[in-house]
Image 1: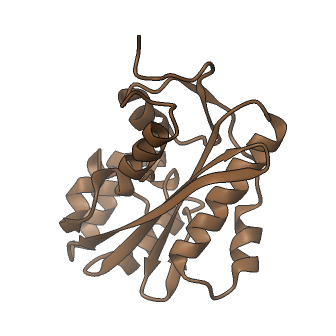
Image 2: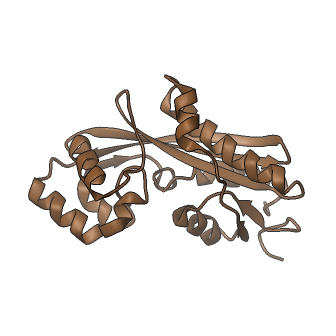
Length: 202
């Protein structure tokens, strides 16, 4: 008998390769159905709410969108926001935007807020949000250009313009927080819920 006890695989409402890899490494069988939601519209509607609240709203929207189409499935939605003080960042649209964003973040401490929501049908069964604090080095423009050239289009794939599991780690002086939070999924609270709910072996 495996660790996963449900009759069907977990349905992940995300395109994120990191989230997929984290869950698969934990022994959870997955089906992938990315949610097509208006993230910028939800952020605009949220107004001046806290970044962690916005991350949770986005995760809710993803989970419920896919759960509503797959009422016999357990669905996980997740999202992440990045805040530098009161300023909320989104995924850079291109290399130029990534360069400008990393210039604003260097030498500073920013926060990543990662939210996860589990839903079935139109019912939210579980939610959690965790925060990590990351301090970037005060690196030179020359280093930044070299980093962007080496990292390539991957810098537009995440909200911070980096992946700490890859070249992005070279940007940092200090990281405080759970590794899985930084990857965009509060994994330990999620696993705890799945065990308590009978989907994972105790």
